[in-house]
Image (cartoon, rainbow, N blue to C red; front, side, top):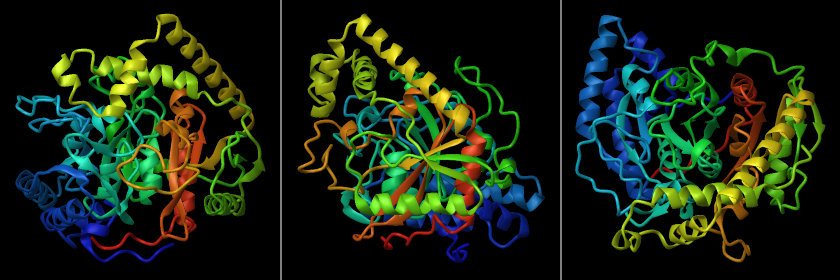
Length: 471
């Protein structure tokens, strides 16, 4: 267990709502503290596309009155939240990191997850940065520039939800909504030292439908697993606009956190059985986290899932989606695109329908293989990333030999293809003080189990890492 923070901007959502109920502080005081941090985070890392101070304070005042009456709107009433700038927010432009998107409105709709947060009384601070249309695993865009890492702004925050990860890490609200099509909540959470969950596909309704199809998820990015469970209870509410939603959850994710870890069957796979050069400090930190699970009574065995790297099939699905994203643009607008995005768009536009269907076949076989694997193991544990954060403003680390972002993040995109729940938990820092993450993967629909195991790591102190420098 760690000592509780004393600054309002550093408290978890769970702690904030308890404080509101007890009259220790008000949503207005908390909103002011979070907005102050948001301005500082923006100056340090460029993690926001916009900060909406006046509407946030007005919403906080309304929340304070509800708490005064003892009638909060929901479990997140008065909690500051940020939203990745790929997700629709009523009355606010969603610019997607692209110079091709027109800012003028109207912007009449909330995405389902935003609507559920608004109904619960959350206080929206602003929109966070993304690479153009969320296409890569780092956060820089033609429209908004480069987002740096809270631990070292010269390093990348990861992506594509890099702005959200930086904002949460620096105290600009304890909760953020991100998206994940190939690792996009887990990559930046690992690099920035926070928690993130990509829940089972369909658990959080998504609208509009992503051009990347059923690879794309919306997920919570938070200070810890307990806050993510609380947030998932809210955002997993049904919404008819998503035809592929799973429907209402059968129970509370927050209530399921305190179930036992003892007896869980855990497969520890240092590299998924692939020839991936995992940095020694990363490998050591992840192994230590696995040892904590074993110490809590989990049955841990070193085992690989026996799958081949599906990167070629992922590229067909992902690059085709990118081509669909910009299909409507004319030649002048296409000239404004991120050059890397333009490259994969050209590649994606060249695939045949048969290429796409072959990639779907690979995806289905991968899902079957992982389903079989989870007959034996409840959880698969891997590094989230084989490396820590590298230079900001580039797609791949210098000298790595990789040509695309998927080359350095091999442990995330397979589980978008299989639609499994996957979370990242901070488990240490390297010699440069940069965070390291451990990834917990469960069978489809085992979101509560993944959250329970992650929560156990927090409760055991395994997720305690130094805070980033004050911006």
